[in-house]
Image (cartoon, rainbow, N blue to C red):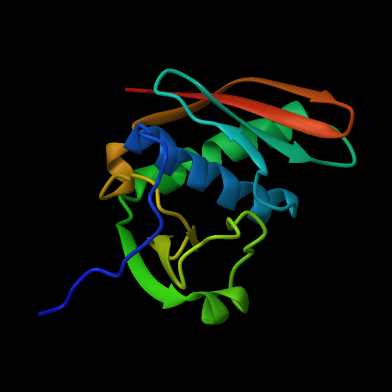
Length: 154
């Protein structure tokens, strides 16, 4: 009988569609803008925000491209799946900067189709079609940090 590996306890109760949308935003920022994943995120049911250190502010056209790309990925109805790997193996494949010092030896990697993958212990939807429509509701650039505020709707 296969038993799910023991992972660190997660201290947040995210809204799965919004949390999965955060993954898509992070993956899209990496792909389109060439930056790292957000190091500061606040994920809530009604609206969420992610901060990205950038040398210059994003243009309105870039923000629209990010929003369009994420909605295209959502429409593809990609599966959200998990794999379990040890930290040493994960360190060669993923950015583990945000991993807590007391992290378990086994990590859960969340895959959104072939679009995005990263270590995470949070709650997620089963497929991207369960996220809903992604909308960037505001964005601001201050002191080298681009904040993107986003919402989900029908």
